[in-house]
Image (cartoon, rainbow, N blue to C red; front, top):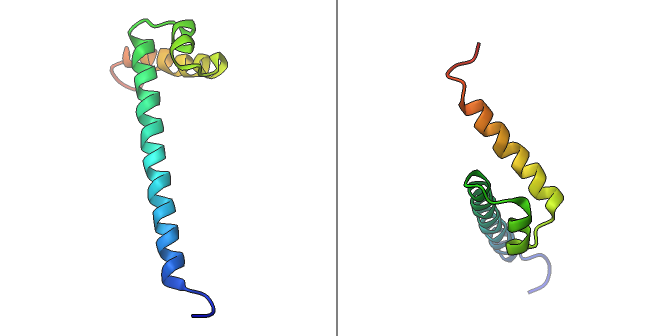
Length: 78
């Protein structure tokens, strides 16, 4: 067959999208576990030792976790 095989192209795109979706789910699960570790008192240095994730990034994630804790202390928007 000559020319463009649209069905094969669509199948490839679908497989690529599924793989990307699975990668994103794994990344979010990893970030949630790191956030949970920060909430439970793990230090940035300890998480770095375990994961080798850049401490700068871990610091940014800790800021989000700390802010979440601060916001959770409010009952309503004033």
